[in-house]
Image 1 (cartoon, rainbow, N blue to C red):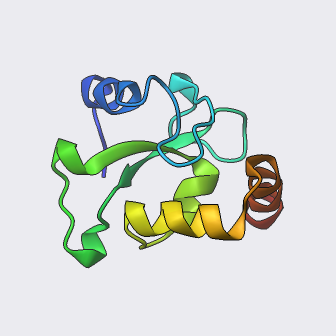
Image 2: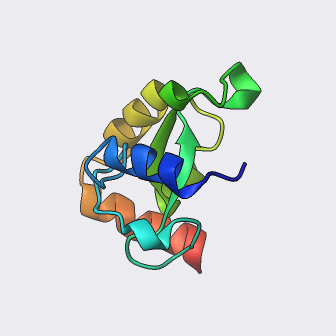
Length: 102
């Protein structure tokens, strides 16, 4: 889905320019890019495939790596997945970069 700049700014600012999931800093101008510092996408907290909508309340900023790894999990499921599988966020980011950017 395409978002105009006004909506992107609202979504980006929901977390003060940080990823909803790993809290990494995002760069507004890197929306839609992959595998660069601050790359991010708009994520559906509840995926459309699981009944989510395109309503602004369901949209959050997610770094490229988290959005790719989250796939069709609910936001709550993904947060548990990260916490259980990757107790160290640096380790998580390193493994995700290798998995999604190699």
